[in-house]
Length: 65
Image 1 (tube, rainbow, N blue to C red):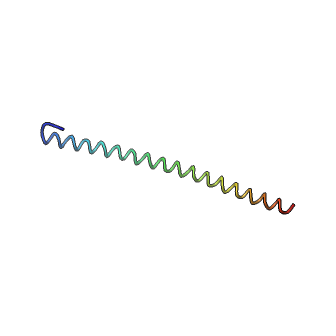
Image 2: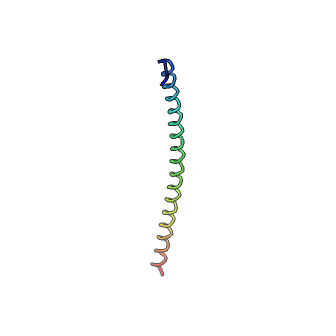
Image 3: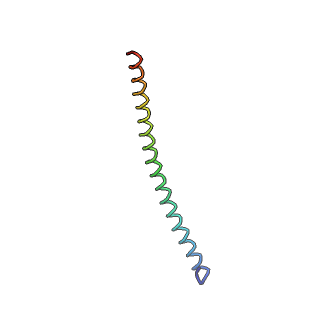
């Protein structure tokens, strides 16, 4: 801490601003990661749905033969 109360207050404010910037960066990164994870989940869901549809079609074909 600073030698004077004014210097201490300035250091505390600077630290708070630095922490606020870092938190903002982390939140932004988390949002980007969430969007990326959401896209991956959507792709996986579409793949599973496609496999289910193909399975249903194959099952019907086997029954008719």
